[in-house]
Figure 1 (cartoon, rainbow, N blue to C red):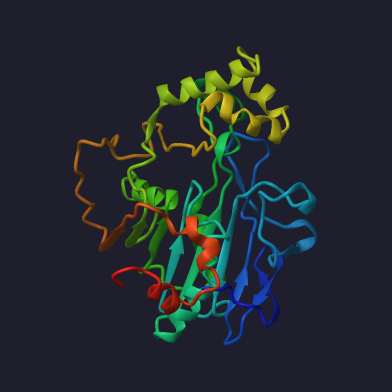
Figure 2: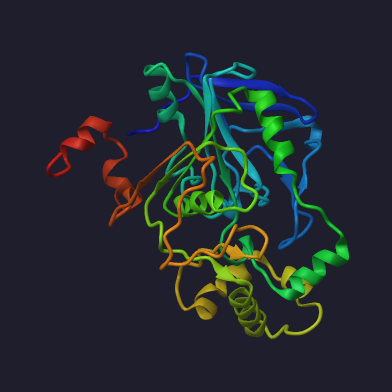
Length: 326
């Protein structure tokens, strides 16, 4: 469907952070993009929860990085995008799109505004949240040297429970009825969230597309990837994480093809021996956990983003007419 045009802007006050600007679409629907909830002091390290914004203000009318250099936006990418009816309105249930690799969180794939209008039309309005994260080498690396670097700094990770509580307090929704969903690699993300040893608070899951294409890697496999990267830059040995951080982002990104051998580096999930309940395999069939109330799986040979330019101006019914055997 073609994207909706906003009718104006809206500003809301976010407790402890400041004023947040976003788009308004009529009927009380508003959208806030790139809300910074965490900061990265340096790449390949743990983030800290944001406690304030510069000048107590954030412009959420622009999608966050990564963006072209001329956009001059920050590149942290630890940001949710939120579409809701109005702050503090207690909607029937929130529907969250969450992804730790690219997929459903891409604004070009899904910005949630059209879906929100549909949810309002059918009488089940929701709060929709999706996340932007960096991908490739800039997004995630794992190695024993990075582990030692983190232990030396003594940094603690973002408290996701605290984040969830803060989002609910500001934007409403029913914490007892949460659905996660993901498209493409985002669907894979959802699958791994279900398999987590200590899962986040959600009750249903929707996973769409290519669910078996990005396997979970062991720490040994990630160590080989890391060593190949530092060997490419000739910075092996002690202090390699800091030497990597000293390299510009575009230089690290350009190493993808010579190191990986392929154009796209999708950042496989990592079995750090803490996150997953058990290491998944292609030969074992897992039963969903008993706490998961329901789940839906979809798969396809060609994902819709491949044809985005051909279908983006069509309504759902017009797109359906073009599908054979529809």
